[in-house]
Image (tube, rainbow, N blue to C red):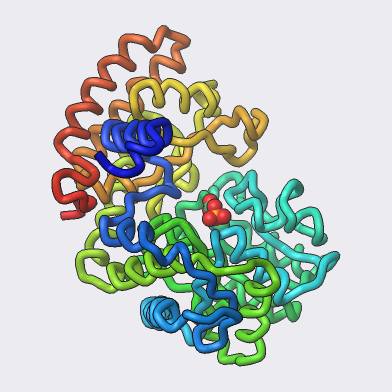
Length: 426
Ligand code: PLP
């Protein structure tokens, strides 16, 4: 038995239960994925012991010669992977990365223009309860309700009217290709910084399957744990060719927002960036998109509304307004069938953000464990079976039980880690 199991049986048991849950449930939360054994191994090392405030070669602590190697590798791999001149690998999370960019580029009280949470933006893009909405004057854009696509004309109009100091593009729930160039044109017209938060599509961007924002944005932020399939963390990139900007960004991360960097996580980020340079990763990301399309097609064939009529990335939004089903009820019923999704607001949602009328469905995790298009289409069909009974106000016990059995068989066929403890990405 491991030291952990000997010393702390409660935590050890909860971890074992979580391992079993990840193996036995189908993960369709668009922001989740399964990190490789190498990534997890790097993260579980003695690098967690080391204080390394500062940056490689300029630390406030002694003994940093080896963690300097780690951080420098992470930086150069991030730059190579995304074609950027500058990378900061220290943000503890996506939200921290975004907070650092706010701090570097604008002042409290300044106007920012970002995508509203209800239309697919992130909390840190100016939502009222977040620092970005509390300490800054946030103006929000959204989607065209009829098409489900970003309303660029509205972005332009709001930019002219409010003269933001910073415009934020990027999303947590949007299934189409964002026109980064158009955002930059609008930002240039009003003299605003353009920050792109590519957290959701970073893996697709790394693989060349989604347009890179790096040539268009002044600054790009991302998480490293979604489609990119690394450890939980954040990253800031820039190719703006402005050393003064890079210095400001570094200063905003440390000492602006954070103390000591998580060197074990930075090591795991470096490993993930190396993995993302492989041909396997490029093919994996193509399968992620193919699987999302295969699922979206089934929902549309079965009469469900997919926002924007399909997907170009790893996720799509299902509107259940027509069916009169809430996202909350759908999420709970699917959960009982061992399918994990998240409820999500949809354009013109009549329900509150806690209830919603939609679901967000994403394929990065299911694809990592090896589901192919046929299996994803089948899975979408099972979800429709449950949603149909919910819409008829029927009792879902029987259909949930049937689907739970099929889910168990599919999960057994595709272990997440299996014997090798590698995600089954072949
Ligand atoms: N940015 C976007 C677009 C996101 O979707 C998320 C997370 O869902 C974040 C930032 C925040 O990342 P984290 O949870 O690591 O703070």
